Length: 434
Image (tube, rainbow, N blue to C red):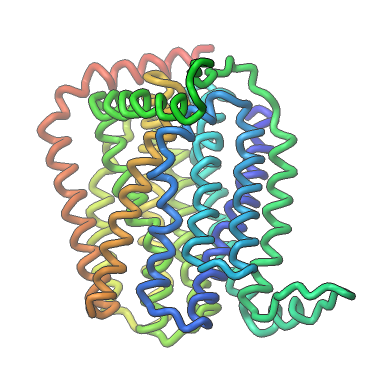
């Protein structure tokens, strides 16, 4: 890998670490504030909100500027969201602002891989990026759990700044204040990301029109890119699969917290460790997929999505920690093995069809819309009186059912993919030869 790849990985690690620790801190902030269970579940769809709303704009923004600069600005927005939590804004609103920063960050994070590396290294690069992201999730949820725990939060709250009243009075607020420093470290790494030399694609602008009018002009371009990727034979199957995976996976981190509280009687600090267990399995699955899978083999992993949905249902029957740990590792491993080749396939097709930033923005729009939809479905289930176990069972049935439909659709249309698969094989041979 080129040297710049490792700088990208470092920036991604610390930004993702802070994101996941902040989620635990936000859950604790709502819990100690007396917020109902459905509001805590609503953190996940609120984080996804701006991914959906701003999808037509963030991809073009990522393609118009050096991606290291885009990532720096995005981390600054996340810091603003943290400050809003500390100074009285509703945690759901403030967490949505953090999601705004993440929405701008993602097209640059993934798009720069296609600028820096050849197609033959995309699966391996995605394996490392996803593996490192999962590692940051593991450490992030553990770090967040410890930050809101009695020992570490007591140390943080013990700091006294002369002549300054910070307003930080609870363990959750102390955790959020500490995470601002982690975002600052990620922003420093963003400044060290090299320029790839790829020509920027400036935003289309008519000087005779207002900024708002020029911004709205991006909407037709985005919808054209979205339609192009859905019409592409390999683009549509990879987009459908990754969309559902992230829709389920994005909500899984709260589902595990809620399940651990009911099934095992765990508090936030203890339950956050089990979220890290799922992430360990995902990391292992991602790394194994990066070593074993190729682009032309990507569609073979679709049945794993059905298995994930069914395993979610089995979770409600587990009440022993020693059975829960290997179960959660297997659940995460299936997801990691599924998403790496599908992500690489989707990135390759999107980069060829419309450019890296725009294709990632389209991917984020669909995936985060699914997170938003499934998260709203899960939160509404709780609000309407369904138990945690009942909501998890319904959620798992929906995931398995939709993935089964995707698999059946692919089986009926797989003959039409032969030309695209042969094209991918030609690219792999060409890159290997050179």
